[in-house]
Amino acid sequence: MSEFDAIFVGAGHNSLACAAHLALKGWNTGIFERSKTIGGAVQSREFTLPGFRHDFGAMNLSLFAGSAFHKKYANELKSHGLEFAPVANCFASAFPDGRWF
Ligand SMILES: Cc1cc2nc3c(=O)[nH]c(=O)nc-3n(C[C@H](O)[C@H](O)[C@H](O)COP(=O)(O)OP(=O)(O)OC[C@H]3O[C@@H](n4cnc5c(N)ncnc54)[C@H](O)[C@@H]3O)c2cc1C
Image (tube, rainbow, N blue to C red):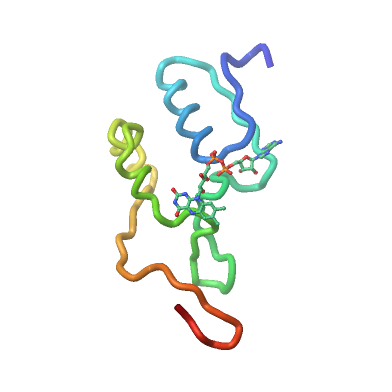
């Protein structure tokens, strides 16, 4: 542990944002994640069928998109693949009897 200036337990986007911010200020940061993938509740993967990518948890990222962090690091994030997908009518609940709302 002495090799790090700061450590983060869990690689959700809050840890990732803090660690990136500190690293760019010269801090030696370590992130320890128990899962095979990073991102915590904010990640898109093929959770149901091959070829269909879904958001695991968070899907409305307007607060992040409008955050000071995104404003500061937008270009770096974009160069690493960050994209927002604006959609309309994206919220729905499906019920077992086939009805939906
Ligand atoms: C179903 C769902 C829908 C949501 N929808 C939205 C939305 O639309 N818009 C929005 O803004 N927010 C939404 N949220 C909330 C948002 O996802 C969370 O506020 C956000 O993910 C919190 O980020 P975080 O980095 O603090 O933690 P998390 O994303 O929870 O990440 C925590 C990480 O820590 C790891 N971890 C935990 N304990 C340990 C340990 N002991 N050792 C190592 N690793 C550990 C976990 O595996 C995980 O990767 C939603 C959440 C859920 C669950």
